[in-house]
Each structure stands twice: as structure tokens, then as C-alpha cells.
Length: 590
Ligand SMILES: [Zn+2]
Image 1 (cartoon, rainbow, N blue to C red):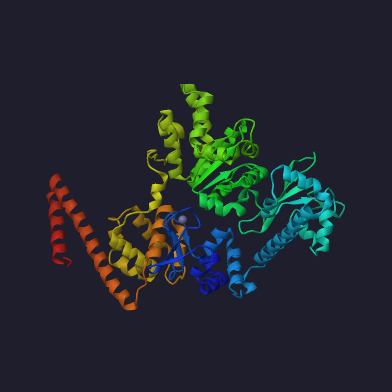
Image 2: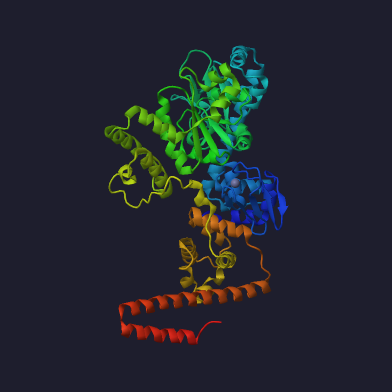
């Protein structure tokens, strides 16, 4: 959060209008004093993505994404915070004092820009070579044989790297690109004795795009018999394998539209499905699916369908994926293809409809894992014990997210006819399994607080400086009659000392978890603006309410103690309490 107090970010936020920025990506319509549109972070048919222009804040009532213009840029374009600041500054012509960036940040930003630039030049070189050079005839034939039309080739900017050690090195040099940058991007490899050579040789090239359409890396499939069959760029400051999905950039709107994303393993699997008209698909790059992958997918789809080859590795991969989807609460299903097929060959043999039919009948991923385990070990006591043991790593992988852990454990313990504790093992305190019938999403709908309390909270979010005043009126006592979330939010408000901080509400949001965060985000969106005289009236109204509530709380506590004392026959205490009650009645609140 320190970064938000950074001058650059502040200046950008002050200068741009959230409505204009988001309006470039989302069709917005005025709805009362707010604006609404179809959410760019989840798939929906009726708009629940809402912008409060005055607060420069957005919130989606469907998926609960919320934030300011910078968090929108970060999420929508998959940018880091400094990149989001820089992008908006550039787009809206805001001069940033570069000295405000630390020399290290500046160096990093420049390095990333230069890597993207050299990758983009290389992609063009490979692509042009494939299209035009006589020496690429074999590569063109190969792609044609694999069903890649001209349109597919240009859409994915496929290319070819000829079987030479110095082709790209020379081409980049004549394009004026620095050798060391190309080495840093992994396009060229530094020789120990000096000099460089091309990493990709005799390979069909697949540029790997970042979510905002910059070339982050390359994948290459060997044309001849060499090894390895597939080669990817090494990781760099612009390429992180565990956060990148091949094809997502090109397919993201199709995925959003479908509300689901097929996850396949290979580049050609993906291309083949797209060529057959099935565009809601993405592929991790030669790695198992990671938590970051799932997080990114969740922005586009409500459901992921993993498509596994029909071999043995399938179960292991599926098992590893279960906790990832559980923790992100993204629905996951699985399609298992016949043994001899992968998605590429399957769709080529049976067509798009056959695969779509399989997708429509796809099994829940956790069900699939469970049924495979039951098949393998049986449901005898010994079998159950083995299943419990196999589930342990999955439970551990969920980490300390209590709700997800509870859902997972209760789901499987129910099916095994065991107690949740049996699945959790001993010494794992602090877990309160909930029934499997409780849908995971229910928590997300936020909480019911009394209308008046919401009004007060809303007021405090906008005017945190009024907090001491309300505390003095007895706010602390009143909160105990609301619910736990009210307590959590109030404690945060008190702790944070938000007074005088322009970003108070945002600091608060950063510090809150799921339920409370959603509640606060909703209030921020709904909060009206108050004219100064209205503000004073509202303070009076809310103060009266707080005093009255606090007084009633004290009184009902007292009445409980009185009846307790009567039951216990403690006359001394009873007299004392009745005396207190008399005093309270005398200063009775009206
Ligand atoms: Zn949404």
C-alpha cells in the first residue's frame, strides 16, 4: 500500500476518470447516479458491474471484484502496479517525474519494455519467414497438414525459425536490436567463449502473448526429428510460465462469452480446437496448472473444463488440480478422452460437436478424482484408509483457507462415511466443517446489517474523521448487537487511523477479507454524496441513533442481570442493580 501514497499514482488517479478508462473496455450505461455494464471479470448476461464515478470506484455485484482505476488496469490487463500507473500516465499524457520512481524500478520498467520490443521484432521476423521464404516450404506444408489455415497462422502469428545458428542473430542485428537484450529475452544464447547463437532452429514458432497482447515469449516445435520436441523461451522479467497460458490473449473474449474455458495441454491441441471453431480454450505452457493460472482463468470464466489425454498421468494431474480450483472457488470439470487420443486428434477424428458433447457431460473434477480413488482402493476399511492418505496432500495444499478446507473435507468425509476429523487427522484444530449442502458461493453475497448501521458505516467510509465522535456516542457498545462482521470492520476502522488519508477506504479494503470486503465495497459503490448541510443533519441523525442503541444495549444487559439476580436470590446485588436501572430511567433517552 505504500506505493499508493506514491506521488505518481496519486497524480494519475487524480487526472484520469475511471468512467473513461473502463468505458474503453466495457460498454457502460447510466443507471441513476451510477453506471452499469457487463462485467469484464466474469461472464454474465445482465449488467452487475457498477461504477460510482464520484468515488472513482467500481464494484461487481456478481463476482465481487472491486477497486479503483489502477486496480482495474492491473486486473484487466494483467499489469503490475507500477506498470498500471505508467500505462495510464502514457495514455492520458500525464507527466510523471521519473525521479519519483526508484532507480531500480526505473531500470526494471525499461528492461521489460526492451524485452517486449525485441520479442515483437523477432515474432515479425519468424512470421515473415514462414510466409515468404522458399526455405520455409516444409514448415508451411507441415502446418497445412495439421489443419492450420492462413487465417490461423496470421491470427496466432505463427512463424518459422530456419535450421541455422545465426539466422535470428543476424536478422536482429540488421533491425538494430541489441544483442544483449535478445540474450536476456532468451532468443539468443550466449556462448561461453564469446558470441551468440539462435535458440530456436528448424522450429515452427508460436509467439506467446501476454494478456495485453505483447509478445512475452516463444514456443517452438521441432520440424525434423531433433530433441526436444517442444522448446519454450526461458523465463525472463516478462515471462513467467506459471502465470501464462498459451492462447488466452487470442481467445479471451470467446472464453468470456462462453463462460467456460477448456484447458488443454499442448499448443497444437489448442490451435487445432480453435481451427475447428472451438475458441474457448487455453493451454499452460508445458507445466502443470498452477494456482496463478486458475486465478487468471477465473477472471474470464465461471467454469474450467480440463481435457486430459486418456493416459495414466491423467489422474495424478487431476488430483493436483483439485485444490487449486477449490481455493479459487472456480468450478472445475474434467473430460477424459479415449486412450489413444489427445484433443488435437480427437477433434480431427470426430469433429467439434463430439467434443462439445463430452464437455456438456463433463464430470465434476473432485467427483472424478474421488471415483478414481474408490476404483483403485475400494471402500473397505483398508481402502478408505488409503483414500484418506491420498487426500492428505490435497487438504494440505488448501493451506489455511478455512472455508475451502471445510468444504473439501466435509465433501469427501460425507462420501466416505467418515467424520471430518478422520480426514483431517489429529491435532488439526480450528476447522469447523460445514455441511456440503452449503454452496461455496453463498458467503460471497455479503452480510445483512441493519439499514441504519449500513448508513453509518457508509458515512464513516467517506468521513473517517467522524469516527471518534461516534465512538464517544457509544458505537462500540452498539456493534455488539450487530454481528461479527460489524465488529471486524469497526476494529479495522479504529486500527487504521484513516483520518486525513485520501485513500482511506482503499486501505481498509486491502485489510479486510472476503465477506467484509464485499460489504464495504458495496457500500462504497452505493454511497451517495452529501451536501455539507446534509452531512450535518446526517451526523445528528446517526448520533441520536447510536446513543439510543447503545443505551438500549446497556439497559437490556442490565435487565438480564436483574432477572439473573432474582433467580439466584442475590438480594444485595438485586438492590444495587435496581438502583442502576432507576438512574438509567431518569436520564432516559428520547
Ligand atoms: Zn463480475
